[in-house]
Amino acid sequence: ENAYEPAYGARPLKRFITKEVETPLAKEIVAGHILPKSKVTITLLAEKLHFQTEELEDTEE
Image 1: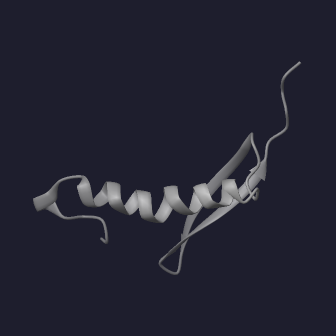
Image 2 (image 1 turned 90 degrees about the vertical axis):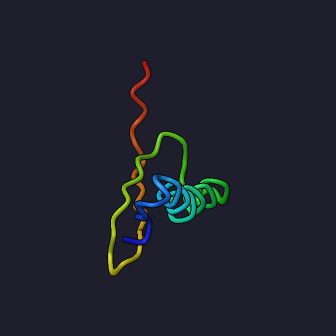
């Protein structure tokens, strides 16, 4: 609902994704809380996005 505005097309959705997903995720990466080769799951709880990370095993041989 916060990102939908038929008159403006996808622009509000792009701004919402940038503000609520990309920026917080980038801050966590820069802070070192999300390591390379990690899986990030985003869930919505109580009208707020929550990020959960899981380190994946290195499968290179």
